[in-house]
Length: 138
Ligand code: CO
Image (tube, rainbow, N blue to C red; front, side):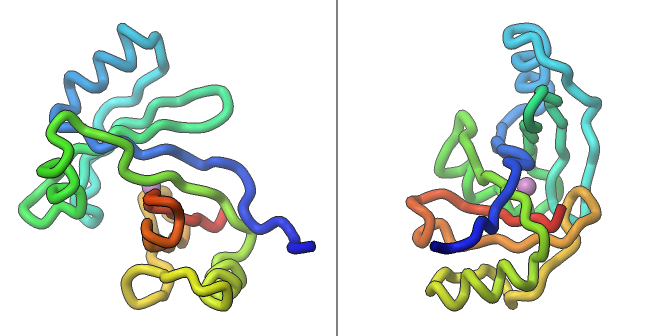
């Protein structure tokens, strides 16, 4: 009955306590294609991109004093899945549909420019089975 809204899995983001060690784990142990670290001061993280044939994994390490993943790493000292990101065609239409369905959009509800230079929003994990969901306009 309802029309598809989310599309491809854009990425899975994993918070890690040590980006060098996590990069080696993905490069050597898992045999994946791993980028150099990319500092993103505006987002409070340094990111390593792991390219897979069907999606990306983003390894996130805190950057700076007010990193949005610092509290998560305090609760999950060895790291853990922080969020998953689904692509949508139209982020405003998606937001309005989600809000109408009762889902909570984090922050002020206005899309921000995310790590890929595209508009993103985050949805409350308690509304999505304990998973922090990011939607990105593809
Ligand atoms: Co993300």
